[in-house]
Image 1: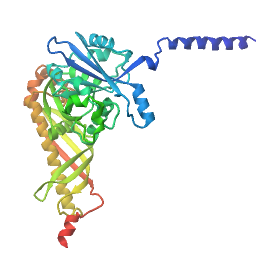
Image 2 (image 1 turned 135 degrees about the horizontal axis):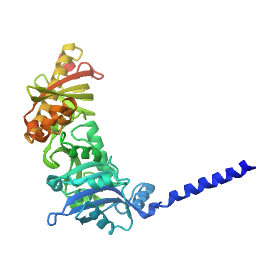
Image 3 (image 1 turned 45 degrees about the vertical axis):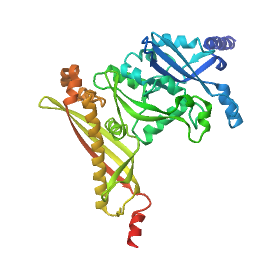
Image 4 (image 1 turned 90 degrees about the vertical axis):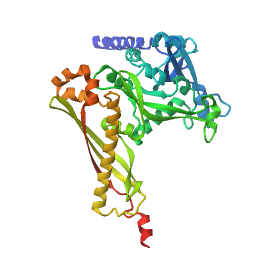
Length: 407
């Protein structure tokens, strides 16, 4: 009897303990879901200016249900506000929104280039303290523009512009490797440590921004306004210094061990860029050492790839042909790495984390150099070596151009 009385009491106590878990629940209809956030600086006052790209759930749901979206409004709205601090600007903006701002679904944070050149070091205190904004949120810099203008541009293929921008960033970093997906936690680590400077990918707006704000922008085969992921911004002490483009940007990712996949073109029989090789895997090791009291860094890049296209008459069945192509591929990678190192050293910005590598291997030497590391990095010696392996040549050994020549 005693046990039969205790069991209901325990169940009742458990139910009472669970009930308070809903005290702070929020209904979806009361939330303004923020998918992207822009940060700019007001030139006249120096205040923060924030912009929120907020989804309209009704428009998106109706468009999907109807299979189109004709006659519906735009799926997002951009609200902006200013303040002396980032948090004040956010609260000031919330007064304009008919629902409560909800940040847990935010995809990316966009920083205007003028703000980035002034310095972003004081930007991230709010994000680290906030319990809503995830530290895995991606960051981009709006090239030659402010963040608000770029956030207002509608994008084709994706109903939500933030999803389009985030998707382009992920795709570009994985298949082309001239940009990278930097997240809040990694950015903060770059800003607080003296052994590595910050880099961020850029997004460039092309076309007429005023036309891009309209829904008609996505109703054209060739939209009048588009945004593309383009270049890597090099920072020094939290301030944007310059932009790295093309092969030089990829050289940065070679050193950072961030090349997930890309396409390299090498010459063939006096024909420039006649062979396309898809890099499938790569691995980079950075070794730091001290020689005669000076730091020396050895960068070793190992890569594997497949031949995807050949525009010259060569016989890929011959071993010497493959060895020659592997050597040429290695030289190309070494050239890109050296170009990236040269640019970084010219700006005295250790974007590769050589200082961190020196701290791990020679902590005593690092303690002596860290206070003047920017100057030391600009003059240090960097040795580059690439080892490339071509695993497959595709379904054809001899290009059809070779066969045609022999007829």
